[in-house]
Length: 376
Image 1: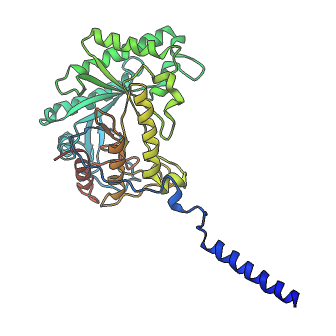
Image 2: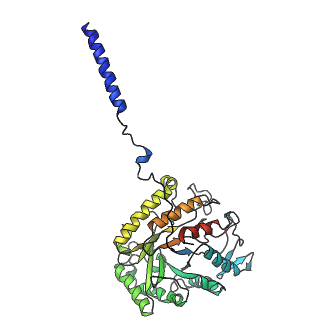
Image 3: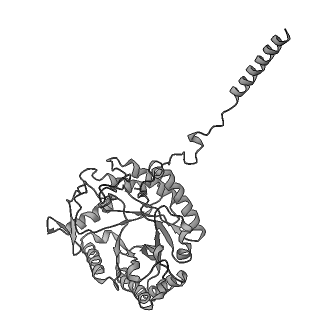
């Protein structure tokens, strides 16, 4: 009898314990516990952003590109758009009109070293001349993006730019020579200063970056140009990686093409949130250094155009542009006080980052850009 009572008592205790545990809230993690589990909100435009779009020229239109621009497939010869071998400068006129539709304030034209790479600099200059020659160019401003060529400058991670006095002098002279363009009435300014982008600035190894940039400013100031210098760094990198090449040197920075995430599946699937977190960190860090952060957006990205066998995950283009719309909201959430935004690109079909109209999606990407960054 005693054993029977013990058995009944034990069974009741087990049932009570089971009931208690079944009522206890589960502590197992869920997707909602992840700090990336949030939706990017729509950010209303209360005042206009200052939007610059990178403009590219190319000697041939890749046959791997499936998009067909509404102006036709074009290339560039001596800085002039060409269609089927016929110079068609009016294409640039249409591009200016399209950029205005998109609310683009200025084109950013790349320029190579006029001192060490003069032949290519002439081609860059011809492109800007074609732009300036258009009857509607007065409605669109422009700025320059100086391309750092470490090979020509003799710079590496172990060799500073000061190691060769002649090349250092050439580097300084480059900026004096491209200042010619700053005399144009439609050159873009930021807070009263001439904007100057330095593409690949993170590669400039210097014994004293503060002195290097101060000399650039001093030289241009003597010519009448106070400059707002923007440096660039590789995508998906921390801002402090090259702090010694930027802090107390430039006015602002941007990360290059964030849509280029290679085979990182997390960045592909959680792109808006991961980019948002990255940019928020960039912004807070740069602003603590008294610098500004410039979000740089792309409308898409296609690895297979340049590498058909690549297994990297491209961002397919859609007519509606939902991915790009979300991306613009990430940009607005992380812009600094000058409200600067870069669009890379207006017409880089090589990687499918362009917002230029095509037969497939028409003017949709122009309209998304304007809606995102302009009050009207």
